[in-house]
Image 1 (cartoon, helix red, strand yellow):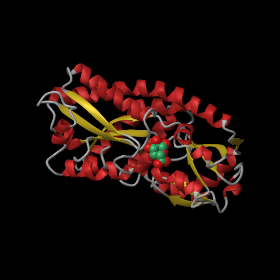
Image 2: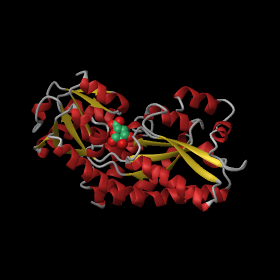
Image 3: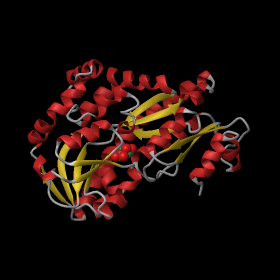
Length: 331
Ligand code: GTR
C-alpha cells in the first residue's frame, strides 16, 4: 500500500504522473489520473461519490481522465489534504466544512448550529445562491469548490450517560473538529472541547482521553465509535456539510473542455451522493440501535437557549448575517 511519505515524495518531486503511470493506471501517455483524499472508509458515500466521478470521467473521455481515491485517511488529516490541494500536491480534497471554517470564514454559516431546519432546507440552500457563493470563495486561496455533499446532522454521543439537557454535558471532555465554531459551541454548553483529528477519535474514546464527541449516524457507525460510546443524544445541532475541493492549479492546467467536464461531472455526482447518503444514514442508525446504543431525546430548546449568545456573536459579522438571512429565507 502507498504510504503517506511515498505519496508526498512523488507529489512534491517530479509530479504525480510517474507514480500513477508506474501503477499502470494511466492507459496512454496523455492520460490524467487525478488524486483524491478522504478520511472515510471504502463504501462511505463521499468515497463512493468521488469513485463514481472517476468512473464517469473515464467513460466519457475513453479512459483519458480518471481519479484515484486515497480513502481512510491514507494521506493524513483533512487540514493536511486542504493544504496539499492548495499547493497542487493533491488534486481533490473531500473534507468537511468544519475543517475549512478557520481559513474560509464564509463557510462558518454552514457549520453554525441551528441554521438549517432539515436536510431538505440544507440541500435547497446549497443548490441555490448561498452554495454557489461559498464554492466561489475557495478560489481566493488556491482551491476550486466543486460541490457540497450531505453530512447528515450532528448529535452528541458519549461513554458516560444520557445527555438530555446542557447540564448533563457539564465537565465532559468532548472531541470537536478543528473549528472555532465547534470549540465555542461545546464550551457554551459547559463541556470541555477537545479538538482532535477525525482519525484519532476512536482511540481517544477507547482510552478515555475524551468522554464523548459529536457527529452523524453514518460516521458513528462506520468509524465503529458506537462500540465505545454507548449513549447517543438527538441534539441535531449542526448540518455542517462536506465540501469537494480541487486544486486550482491542477484544474487550470487542464484544457478548457476537460475543465468544464470535471466541473460538470462533479455537479452530477451530487444527486448520486444524496441517494447513497439517505440509504446509508438509515442503515447506520438501524445497525447502531441494534447493537444496543441508547438513544436519548434532548430538550432542544434548552440547547438553543444556552448557545444563543455564542451564535449571535458569529452573526455580528455582516457577511455571515447576510448569508444567514439568505438561508432562513428559503427555510
Ligand atoms: C464527518 C465528516 C468528516 C470529518 C468528521 C470530523 O462527519 O464526514 O469529513 O470532518 O466528520 O468530525 O472530523
